[in-house]
Amino acid sequence: MTAQQSFLFIVVLIAASGFFSLAEISLAASRRIRLRKLAAEGDTRAPRVLALQEQPGDYFTVVQIAQNAVAILGGIVGEGAFSPFFTQLLGYWFSEPVAQSAGFVLSFLMVISLFILFADLFPKRLGMAEPEKLAMAVHGGMRLFTILLRPLVWVYSRLTDTLFKLTGLPMLRDDRVTSEDVLAMTEAVTQAGILAQNEQRVIANVFDLDNRSVASAMSGRDRIAYFFRDDPDEVIRARIAEEPYATYPVCDGDIDHVIGYVDSRDLYQRVLNGQPLTLRDDALLHKVLVIPDRLSLAETLDQFRQVQEDFAVVVNEYSLVVGVVTLNDVMSTVMGDLMGPDDEELIVRRDENSWLIDGSTPIEDVLHVLKIDEFPHFEEYDTLAGFLIVMLRRIPRRTDSVVWAGYKFEVMDVDSYRIDQVLVTRLETGEAAAPTP
Image (cartoon, rainbow, N blue to C red):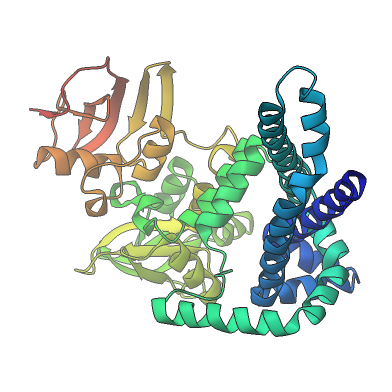
């Protein structure tokens, strides 16, 4: 074979190797979501590529047979492709033995470089850039090679299957999409500037509903505005004026005996009609949804959906009322920073290194704002107040503090054993992480 023929043969081998490299990487990198979209739009090649991703064994066997065959042929032909040229060129300056040895080395490096550049790096980068489009483009050619190499493909595929069975390794790709996958994708899209950071946070909050208890979003027992069944007209009017809410629990004797709830719109209607306000009228009372305090927010939403309500009373294992929760409370948890400025702020940033935080603030919100990975004994509490109680092992008093993860949490105000305000300060590096009595 002449030098020119060897060179042309090398070019053909490089092109063939590049084709198979492109076929391999484009199939592996193709995103199933985009392929399904193309299939829905009527592209008949997309379903075939999806089928190959489900069972890629024969496809990759063809690729490996072809690439190894090309590599062997390239090694055989490579020496004759460029060695004579380099040997002749170097013969002007060196002796014949030295020129032959150097010519062989240069020829070898030349062939290797051409294969690396044009048969590996370039086609693989190209395949990563447009995987779905290229996977569909090379599908026909790969199908032809699969038919031509069927006997070899069958032998090597059976041998490979046997090895997988012996080792107990999975033979199929797990294409299940987890919440972590979706969150990772939204973070990548946010970094690319396609999705706003607040919008990405909303998506993360939706997936966090399963991990957050209803106690993290409810209004606590001490913040419940409620009526007794026998409250007179003037008491009801005064309570509405002082604490204007959409819904009020109605109790019999004490707050732990809730018999229903009343909608403020019904009360306003009676006022406009000049009727007296009395809660002994059963027409005003609605059956109240009662849920345990161990439910997650996702389960709470499901309870609202089942009974077509947007208000619930939360009780503990002793059937004592610990709070109330509304659909708006849950949605506020999801919306986060997108909530309007009229909503009550539980976390107020004072400056770059300090925050004033309400004790009832959900601990997940504190983690997010302070960018802390986790709090100790995380499963034992739902709020910042709970964190302080667990760390101090007692009911905190004013000026009590806890240092954790580079922050000092100092109790600023306590009202009847309830932690109202906590001052959180970022500490200088090196300060101890321990509770301060």
